[in-house]
Image 1 (spheres, helix red, strand yellow):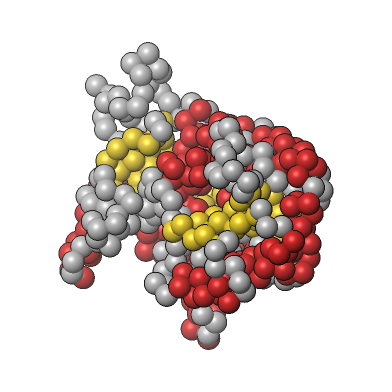
Image 2 (image 1 turned 60 degrees about the vertical axis):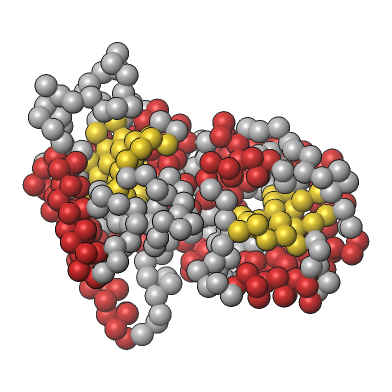
Length: 426
């Protein structure tokens, strides 16, 4: 008899397509990847798929300060598991390799499924060659299909060297040609992978996704007489936080009601201290707040406290190919957003209509748009309200979940290479 997934009611049909979303990410709490994984899972589940999130490796170095502690669980109705058996990093190299082997074996069983279940198709996050090759092999043996998800340009953060360029060439000519399809976040990546996948593989562009209901919170009065400009992100992102502090410093004296709240952490323990010193040197020590990271469950409430949001992006291939997930979350709050016009952002947002767009690498221009938001709050609120409607129309997790479910149903079938872009199948 077929075993019923724990999150499926007894009155639901038992022939739902099975999908695994897998990768070496932390879940349910983690970086932008965790947010995108959850959005995929929720959209696909709403589209009638049986979805499970599989974390292939550890996400926590130790139990102290760990964000993820459960091996198996449910997060907002989405089941997840750490296939290695633990969210914590093993103490020795040998134990870590043994856990990788155990993880691969358990993952293979999940793909194959129990008696009476169809094999699961896989959406794989990450560019680790061994995991891609292993997953493709497991899917082939099970009669299933493997799709990779790409939100960043391949090797964009790797140190440039002859060896790196050689490896990138080998990787793109071999590993990427193994997969049955690719989910990309931008037009830049769409063009790239249409050139690099094998004939018969499929490519679909899915932009940033947001569950608007998750961020449908009433505005909070954090402190009477105080307005908060908020930034959420990794503090290591090149030029973002430093440039934002500089831009805020240019207008802070004219708008004493406003403070800057920076939410996020860094892999460098000294990074936050340097940013605090930078703010203090600019005379903003009392008006720039660093909160550290916030767990996913608490993020909507924290965003509800903000009056406006800032998202500076430096120019470069990483920003041309990428599309920041947090932009959709900002827009969902119906608060005004000042954002750099890089990559696909101008394809969806209009300057002064549903967001405030700024050219890249221009601190003075960013400061000017902040001043516009601060000086004209009524107009800014109107822009924020229209931004939420744009998020509903362009980035809704349920409508894109239907597109993605249709795409996954076709993946692995014979036929010429095809691609589905924005709006197709919605």
